[in-house]
Length: 157
Image: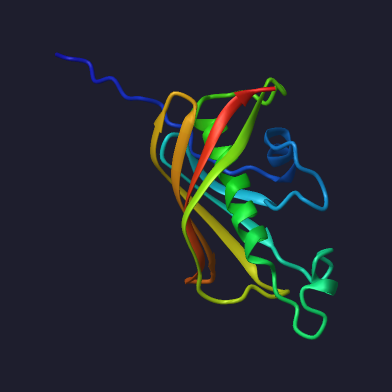
């Protein structure tokens, strides 16, 4: 009887402390609050709670606060850095950084405002050597608010 081999795939959540172990960012630039699900080499779902206390809201815009699109893309890039590290089975040791090297086909569909919960989804398209490319979407509820193809590069510090 042949014995089946099954590959063990980590699927799991990460709290803010684990997120901070995987990202060098800190307040006010840490834009991932929690990882809901991660399947290394495939997909990641994370969240960012958007509050009126964000440091950018007083200036963007004073009359009607809107989260800047570049920060939505940055939140997606941070989620992608976590997925890349998990896909490489990379322990957070400070030896490598995940650089944003490209954003293609970025689209913004609706504003993100205080009180929204931004769901960050990343799916691996491909990787070759140190270059990783992802399909990324930010959602509020079931509505896609932003999307892009994002490329990152893993480099030694």
